[in-house]
Structure formats: C-alpha cells, structure tokens
Amino acid sequence: MRFQIRRAINNIYQAYSLDNGRMYTARIKGKVMKKDEAEYSPVAVGDIAIGEPYSDSEALIVSIEVRRSSFRRWNLKKEMNQTISANQDMTAIVVSPSSPPFRPRFLDRAIACSSGAEILIIMNKADDGLEQSVKDSLELYRSLGFAVISVSSVTGEGIEELKKLLEGRITAFVGQSGVGKSTLINTILGSQQRTGEVSWKYNRGKHTTNHALYIEKGLISVIDTPGVREIEVPFENPELLISAFPELIGAPCLYSGCLHHGEDGCAVPDKVMCGDISEERYDSYLRMLSAIEARTPVYQRSRRR
Image (cartoon, rainbow, N blue to C red; front, side, top):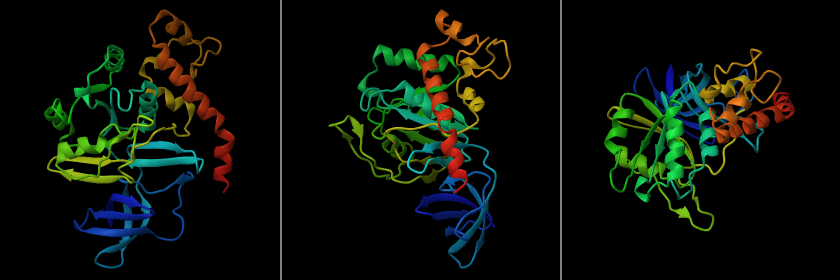
C-alpha cells in the first residue's frame, strides 16, 4: 500500500493511504530503513512510503519512493543530512523585514537547501515597511529569476495573490523562527497552527511549530516546517551548489567543472569586480562551498557508523 506522510514526530508517522483514503499511525518496520545514504530521520513529511497495514489504523513502513524534490539541511548535532520536507512542488521561503531582521545570507542558504522544487520568496510583515536596502535585495532575487511576493496577515496585502500561486501545488513553508510563517498559513487556510511572539531579548523568534505538518484546504496544500534560527546547507556534490546561484551558471571559465572559487581560468571574480555578479551573493556561495568541503571527513565517518 502507498502512503503519503502527513506528520512525523519521534519516528511515529501520520500516513494517509493513497489506496483507500484512510489515515494510519505508522512506524518503520525493523530498527533501520536501508538507504543509500546515511541520513537523520529517514522519513519526512511529504514522502511517499510503501507500507503494510496490520490493523484498521496502524501500519509499518517498509520503504520510501525516490523523492522528486526535497528541502534538506545539515544536522550539526548528528553530523549528517536531514530531510525536512519531500515531494513539494514549491518551496516558499518566508522572510521578514525587521523582526527578525532580513538576512540575505540565510535566504541564500535556504535556497541552496531546496532541490527539485520552484522557489518562492515571501516577504511577510510587509506592513512593517521595507527599507531601501531590503527592496534592493529583493529586486536582485527577482532579477535572478526567483519569484518574490510581499504579504501581510495584518493588512491582507498580497494574500489573495499568494493563494493563487499556491493553488494546485504542494508548497513547503520554511523560514526563521518569528517570521510569522504559521500565522501566514493560518491566514491562508484558516487553520489553527500554534503561533508565538518574537523574543525581544535576541530579536529572534520563539519556536512554535516543533515538527513538520502537512495541511490542506481546497486546492491548497502546504507543509509547515519548524522555524529555525540558523541553517546549514546539506552535504552534497559541490557542483550541485551552483544550481542555487543562477548567476554562476554558464560563466565563461577556461575549464569545465569550474567551482568558481578563483581557480586558474575562473571568470567569476572578474564578473564580481565589474558588478555583473553581486559581491554579497558570491561571498554567500564561497562560504557554503567552504562548509561543504570542510565536512567531507566527518561525512565519511558518519557513513561507517
């Protein structure tokens, strides 16, 4: 039987049967699910799982189907990749202008953590007002081909337009704690996700969604994910990182397979100096590339466990 994972808490899953339309409480059959890659929490919300029901409401998960998309991050504590959501059509990265502050480097990392899905950048709390530097930054992302929308749950700005963008798709919502992600989802769907205020001591959000949850209403389906304060890009082939930086794709470097960190024949540094490529974005890229390369020994150790 095929299931869609709707909720995941401590290796217990809420699984919706795609065969009979019933909801099951599911667990992984056996202690460990065999996978090609060592990964923290091998089953994610949005996964399509193959399972065996053993009662009217319980099932065992045997395997998961190949993901067509995902949002993955590097789990610092476990030193391995962690999939937060799977099989979404779009990843909506929610940011805010000032509370918590807009952080382009966080946004760059979030984009790099998403694969196989369209990117939508949502500037929430637009009623707080946008400084010119924030407007300029959003315009840069638009120029690179990323969809950007400004919304406000308070004034209703952009909400109807956002709903239209979400219709007919599965969208994973991700963002820093305190950006108003769950409040925004409540506004869109009329759901009652628990929300919290920003911690003023650190100007960071308090965690309110502590596990990923699939919610749907009408033509809109969303995966609400836990808010985070920091995010690290997953361990991947470094060449895959370039897909998150469209301005680097097709750079006229001397050698194919150039990683664009200033090696011989790399054309990117000159483009940065000329202003054709954002210096801030390029710095984000170099920081992520360095982080991926530095983890290689750790990752190999985790696979031997």
